[in-house]
Each structure stands twice: as structure tokens, then as C-alpha cells.
Image 1 (cartoon, one colour):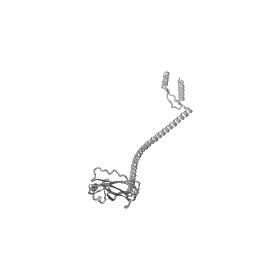
Image 2: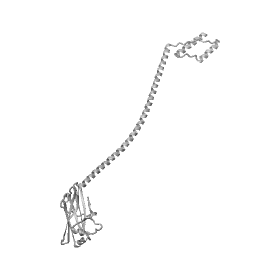
Image 3: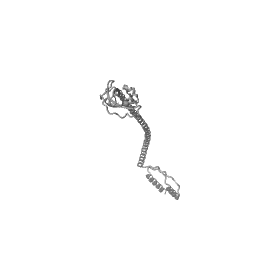
Image 4: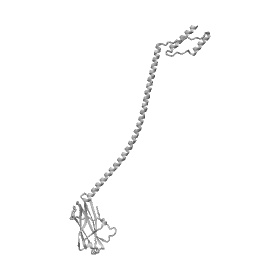
Length: 300
């Protein structure tokens, strides 16, 4: 009976060792231990222990070692991969931080650039306005210089009375005058023409007396008149008055009016005009002299 139990135990151990090659030795399961104890109790024999040595198959041991080496190699490679992933993540985080840092700097520089651009636009507008004002000032200065030059060089016409003639026609007293027109300046007057009118009027002049009614054109002696004290053109005119008018002209209760106009072109092609009005009475009339009426003098 004892031999049977030993053989059974050896067979069981060998089978278990073959199924679990490369695994450390394990004790019997609780169920088998109980069965063994029951058998021993039934037989009435005392307990005993037999030393068992499990011999591992070399091929199975080599395969177990290969599997462990492969497992260790895989674990090492996994660890390296994890380390590389951690390093890559760290580098990525660092790169992200640098990108964020650079993005903030780009934003700041963009803001500074926008401010600088606005300031540049403002100063450009100011400079443009200043240039426009400078150009306008230069144009005005050129125009003023041109106008001043024209004023210095252009012809200015003036009217003067040369002589008077008093005759006694059958219809009354003829008062005639030769009107003298001269030019001052440094250039001639061209295409000169004008008109003159004489009229006996009350003294002082009635309110609303109108000198604006231009008399018709009176022929002049020349159409181009150079400047100079001895160069003149003439217009003749006069009026026939009664003895009563002549007496009142002599005592100053009436006055003799002479008014008219002159048109001409200066050397710069600008049309110029002169409106004039003169009066005489009393002693001036006997001397053949007129005096100007200031309110009715106009020249362009």
C-alpha cells in the first residue's frame, strides 16, 4: 500500500512539473492533501515525508529563459519608447512655450508697428498739408510779384483839360473844351477810345445825380499812346448855353459838368477803364479850369 502511494505521488508530481516547466515548485492542492490525509487515517499508518526533486527539462528551461529575455527586451524597448515619448513631449511643451512667447512678442511688435504706422500717417498728412500751404504761399507770392511788376510797368491813363474856347453863335454861347488824355507808367496803352459829355447843372448837385450814363464814343487822335509828359491824345466837346446860364455860371449859382470814360489795353493785354467827372464855375470858368469830383472818379 505504501509503495502504491509513493508511485502515485511521483507520477502526479512529474505530470505537474511537465505542465508547469520553468515554474517554481508548488505544494499539493488542498483537495489532494485532504484526500491523502483521509487515506492515511483509514490505513491507520503513521505520517511520513519523502524528498522529491523536480528535474526541469533543458529545452523548456531554455524556452523559458528566451521568453524572459524577450520580455525583458520588450520591457526595455517600451521603457526607451516611453522615455523618448516623454522627451518629445517635453520638447513639444518647450517649443509650445517658445511659440507662445514669440506669439506675444509678435503681437507686441505688431501693436508697435500699428502705432508707428498711425504716427507716420499723421506726420505724412501734416507734411502734405504743409507742402500744400507752402505751394499755395509760393503761388500767392508769384501772383503778388507778377501783380506788383504789372503795377510798376503798366500804363495809367489820366484826363486833363487843355484849353477852352468861348464863342457867341447865333443860338447862344458856345463853351468848348479840348480834353487831353495822357499816360504815365513804363509801357504804352493800346486801342484807346473814350467819350466826353458837357452839361450845365445846378450847384450844388441835386441828390441822385447820375454820372453812370456813359456818353457815346468820341474819336481820339491816336489808338496807341506811349507814356510821357509830351504825349497826349485829345477829345473835343462843348455845350451851348443861354446868356442866363452863362451869367449863373459866372456868379457860381450853377456849374458846368464834364464827365466821360476812357478804355484801353495795357501791355499785358488787360482791359483797363477810367471814369472821370469834373466841374467848373465862377473864377475857374473864366480861367478855363476844371476841378475833379472825387466821388465819381474810378480807375481799373
